[in-house]
Length: 318
Image 1 (cartoon, rainbow, N blue to C red):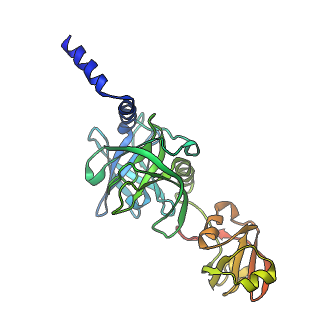
Image 2 (cartoon, rainbow, N blue to C red):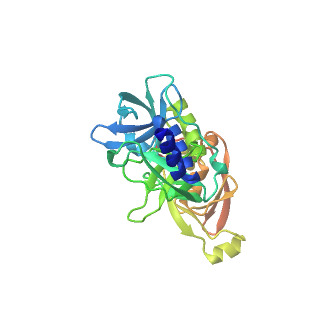
Image 3 (cartoon, helix red, strand yellow):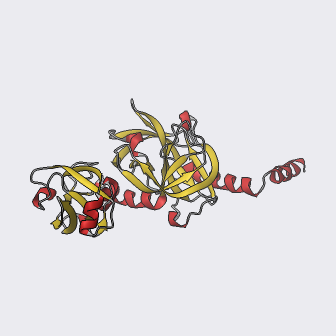
């Protein structure tokens, strides 16, 4: 009888918010793992299939062919890195097993600012630590370690620390809405997660190819303003573009007739204001397809056609 009364008291101490967090953690934590890489440190990851596929951050496993994976119950297993994409900071690892605990993905496009966000991971090696907060903002852009800008990033105030990288950000139902990837120090309450829709797409490409293929032009450049005189002369609505500094020999850019000092102002009929705009447009779907480009050369506007290649090296973007 006393035990029943004690349980009733415990239930009363848990308000609706607490019960939601507890339920989510109980559902998700068995699928969260610690990822250790020899001479590289550790991070977090989570199983998303019952046969041993797990997601983590690229910066946790990059350069490694295998890692050590530790489960909630203390079991350790070898994990083989199947592929990683530094441009989105995502990687896939496989561990042997079947009927393993796993999580499900939510549709990140349905996430709303203010909803509960729960982060589970292994900060500083403290296994399966939980922090909770809310989704602070949607659609943020975050500069990856490769220099590429990634869009559609979730911002949350759920505290992250070194070791949380690669762990899941989940809803009160325990569905994954993001992969925790970064925090800003020394700021407090500024944490970021790769949206689940992005993670699912990248995971499918990593499983297929071992990396993410992007299209490649073979040029280098930087943002430059369009002079008012040129803008008036050509009737342009854009105020900036990408000034080409280098063109690789025998590249798609060279074949299209692009030259150093050309100013790219449109690609695939979309405005190009800076290098980030151009990189966003260099998707896998462009490979081998003729794409119109608008450039300013001197005081003239030229319409050229370029046929991008597949990027020849992982991480190559332009």
